[in-house]
Image (cartoon, rainbow, N blue to C red; front, top):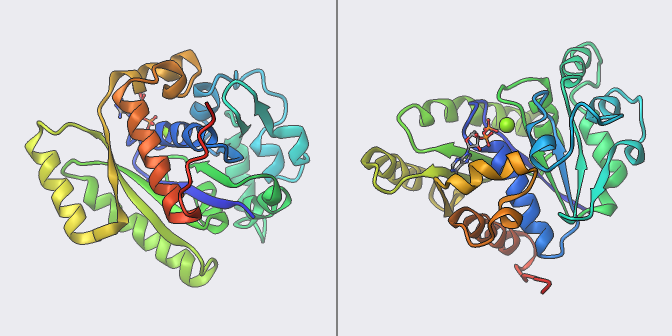
Length: 262
Ligand code: ADP
Ligand code: MG
């Protein structure tokens, strides 16, 4: 059975896609079988991992609307060692059509059930909205990973997200847990960032990952080369931070043995 993590925050630009790609690649580097699912019509996770979103045939849209089989959509990327369910602008159509289907909240869950025995971890890169696709992700997920920037408005958006998570947990998916809050793009010289970070740990305790993702230009550059940061610059602070995050995730879920290859 795979463990499904929704990487969600309705705010844009907080590091969802960066976290999805780099946590997925770091988990894959520890020999876990990983599926990265792009749920955003912007296709940033798809492009960021080196797949041309305008050249892909069938996408997550076709799976969600039951117009394809997983084998026709999911592609294994040998250089990175993980599998991708790509997305592009067609996802907008899935978002709209799923609103008219009675079981529209369960589309992703049924797709993932078909491939559950093929992967150890499934990471869902959510769009920047509490949309039908994000609801699909929360219905299909075991845990929610919330990336956030430590800035003044960060906590405000968190309340709405927590309300949605709790509602879905109560009504549809009782096993759903907050997997963790991840501090991203962190600059320790910024006093406000430190204040917000302290508030987070006071309020959410060990739900806040110990790993902090620093602001690191290598993380911003890597997607334009179609690579996770660990293959673009393995020595960068960003690469080390996401590997540490993978270690934390593994410790929580499977005893934490790092099966590092070479
Ligand atoms: P989201 O998916 O939440 O919209 P992204 O992961 O796309 O956010 O990140 C927004 C922008 O910030 C992107 O240009 C990305 O490359 C950059 N970025 C993300 N994390 C970092 C980081 N830790 N350091 C520097 N730049 C980052
Ligand atoms: Mg994104």
